[in-house]
Length: 267
Ligand SMILES: [Zn+2]
Image 1: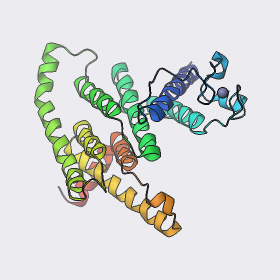
Image 2 (image 1 turned 90 degrees about the vertical axis):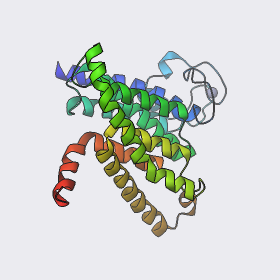
Image 3 (image 1 turned 180 degrees about the vertical axis):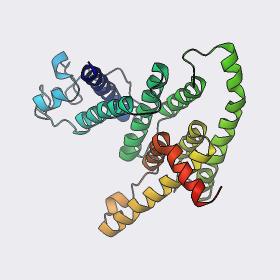
């Protein structure tokens, strides 16, 4: 029974992943997101059995059925990873005590996947995905501890809400300064918004630690690129993916990490 539930969640995740692929490639290019029902190359209508997440790619041998053009490996990879991530979160995370919060954390992770890949690929973070991430974050805080918010719980939420907004401002301040001083060369406005949402979602302590993790992983990656002397990569490193890494680490291991940091600095 448990295995059947996990399998269903995996299949659900791959279907969501298939939609995320559409968002990843179409939002930065301002294209319509009405599904991937036509071939990207020749425009022919796709068969329903050629649109199964993950499986269709391998059955088709990585090529389109209609015109035999190469399909990007990104499609099955994102579909598979989304499925795996959903199962892992469902299996073992502090957020699955309520169904609502599980759905919301799936939504948050979906937005983070889109931001990670589209920033890596196009150096662009879509405003729509940032808005989606913000809305999921508001709901995520609102649904804490209760399945159905009542007027009382919503009222009780308003006070921490201002704290979360302040946290967002605190966390995005360093990124804003880099954005402002470097005249958009080092960071984009998308990074500023993303870091603000990180602070809003995580609170200022975990948010700043997430920022720190982003800078450290970014620096490690930068050093590797310099050692490899890969000029193509060097000119195209976006910061968004590292912000996503920091956010995910703090979402799932934040409490433990904050405890360690507080112990080290005797806070
Ligand atoms: Zn085709």
